Every structure is written in C-alpha cells, then in structure tokens.
Image (cartoon, rainbow over all chains, first blue to last red; front, side, top):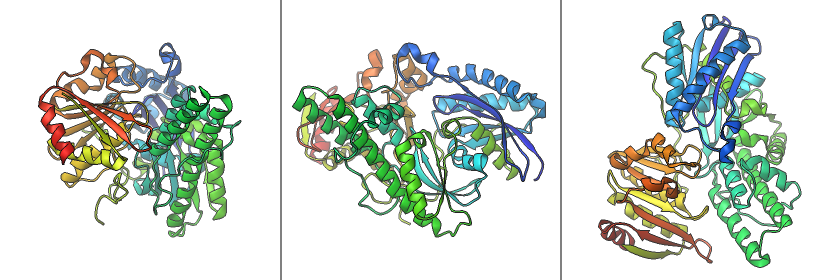
Length: 365
Length: 157
C-alpha cells in the first residue's frame, strides 16, 4: 500500500493519557501533526509526589479532551483520518481498557478502522518515526517499567535478546532517590546530584556482568546502595552532602556500566545479522540520562554502529508512537474490530524464553 | 500465630517462598511488608516462579512497582502480584480491583500498609527485615491460626 495515511493514536496504558495524529507518505519522513499528553503533575501536585493514574475513569475523562485537542491541533476532522490506533496492552488494565473503549467508540461513530497496538512495539518502532531507521536495528528499551534488548526485524517482528530479571533501571533510580531523600521522579534528581559526586568512591555491584547473555538485574544494586547509606549514617550520624552525591554518582556509574556492557553483547549478536546500516536505538525515559547515553555512544563507536536516541517527548510514553505503530501495522494489512481486547501483558516476542531469577533459561530450547 | 525465622541468604529466603508456593490456593492473601530493599519482590518472584514452573510455564516476573499489579495464570487460577507503594489512598485499591481478587485469586501484596482498613483478616503477613549480615533476612510471619501449620511445613521443607 503506497498511499498517504493519517492515523489518530491513543495511549493510556500507564500514568499518562495521550492522543496524537501522525501522517505518512511512503518515501517521505512521517509527520507528527499533533501530540497531546495530559499533564499529571499539576493534577497531583496536592499529593506531593508521583501518583499513578490508576482510575480508568480518570483516563476516560481525559481521553476525550486529548482526542479533541489532537484533532484541533492537527486541524483535521475525524472524517479525514484513515484509522484509529490504540494501545491494547501491555499495561495497567483499567487504563488500557479506557483507551480501547474510547477507540472503539470513535471507530463505531466514524466508521474508521481500528488498529490495536502493542505499547512496547510503539516504543520499538519510534526510531522509524523519528529517524527512518531501517530493519533490522537493535533496540534498547529502558524506562520506569521496562528494560529489554530487542532486534526489530519488521513492524511486527521482534526478537528479544534479554532484559531485566527484576527491577527496571527507571525504578532503580526512583528508589535510589527515595532512599537518599531526593525528589521524585528519581532519574533527573539522582543525575543532578551525581554531577558533583565521585563515581568511583563506592564499589557498587554490577549484577550479572559475570554471566553470558543480555539479561540484567538491578534489584541488588538498590540493596547495596542501602547498605552503604546505612553504614555512612551510622558512621557520621547522618548522610553528608558529599556522601550523597558520591552515592548517586557511584549508583549511576554502575547502571551505565551494566547497560553499556550488555549493549556490547547485544550488538555482537545483532551484528551477526550483517545489517546494512548498523543501528542501536534507545527509547524510554532513562535514555535522557547523559552518563548512560555517553556510555552507550562509546559502545556504538567501537563497532561503527549508528546511535539513535529519539527526542525525549517521543522516548517517554506518548501517543505519536502509537499512531506511527498503527500506520506500520495498517500498511501490513492489520485491522481489528470490536472484539479487540485489552491485554495487561503482551510480550513482543513470544518465542524467546525469559530468564528465571536463578539465572537459568526458563524453557528448554 | 507469630513465627520468627532467620534466613542466611537470598537463596534461603527463595527456598522458603518456593516451599510455601504449592500450599496456596484461591482466596489466600500474603502481605509482604518491610523497607525498600528488604527483599519483598525477591520473595514474591520466587513464589510466583515456583507456581508457574509447576504448571510448566515460564515467564518473566517483573517488579510491579511501575504497573501496580501484575497478574499471572498459574494453570490453576489467577495469581496477583501487587505493589501498593505508589498509592496514596485506600480508595485506589478498590479501583485496582484488588478487593475482589482477594476472594478469587492468590494475592501477594507489597506495601500492604496502603490497604488501611481493607487488610483482609485472613491474610498471612510476612515482615522482612534486613540484618547486619549481608544477604541475611529475618522474616516474622503473623496471621490467623490456620497459617501456622502451613508456614511451619514450608520452613521444614
């Protein structure tokens, strides 16, 4: 199919509610005509922290407004769209349901086809939206709730090389901030604190580096940090400013080391496919961390691999990536109907075995 | 019932979780309390993986902190793994559907203090405490009498 497609995307699988319109003409770079993310910060300022949008009702209320704004900003009526794409999983079931119901309503009312999109595929296909990356490319998806290496081979074809067996790095940053009395979300606050810290003062563990493969573990790092903190508090009667900065820098260095080394291994596997334009792309909020980014850039430079990091607004949860993934799926001939259901879990790659906590491969190959 | 037990390593704690796993059935709620880094998710993951493995299933057991709830099908029924850390009000627990799940599924709940008055009286509470020794944990198990034999059997396994 070679015609221009304009698709509305809806995203409500976790904390954010979002809608966006993306247009694509084959042979040209896709255009994000509008991208609206309903702000959570002001809404929850009273609670003094990051509060999840768990209520399907709250997503529902905001979805309508987001859709309206996205269409207004794109200056298009529904009738000029080609399809409605919506995150159908994985995620918090209430939120996903709210999005799917909204999309079904829009589809039924407008007669437009419906395309269910995997939220992770949305992230994984973003390098094609922002940089027209060509398959196959290596993807590191690293966010608050996810951490995995994927080889993207096609719009619906992903091979998982490995991932975290416990916490995601974003969560580790949040918990580090919590343990050290820094503001949430932890990513920016730990990074800021680390700038004045010594990354080599505390020798925090690099879990699973001693084992082959691309699986990662970040939970033990948190425990190690906690022990160092308690030791310092006991020794000095409190956590001194420099100690805290050094802890942040040491923690960040450990995460960067693990991600860099595992990326190196993932690249080796990926380069065996002899891609024409070797590319490592990152997505997820953690990609905004400058130390981690620099470490990944260094790894890429070693093998002459192109490093892509989409702009942060398209790296974190957004609806433009859902609209884009919808366009890719639509072109592949994929359509959903009113039987589209919300899936709380939906792995991108159903064939690669996941790793058990013990470090053994789950399924016998 | 109050049972205190010291586990010398993460593996020892995991072995207890694995031994407790097959004794659970729909309607059982296990509350996991303890500070950040106490090993609540480690315990839950070990238990969930034991049940999945017994059913011949293999899946990642990610931390539920971000998604609040992860649900699993262990071949017998539903298993819920919830982390209420990010919640601020017990009302939000009802929005999650957790109260219904307490009746119909096996539920493992981290940060159960967020439940307020909604804590089921039949629940087993496991409080995980770190000690001075790296990797060592003291678990304090409390709950109504029927849990006593099950916890003791799992400790002896």
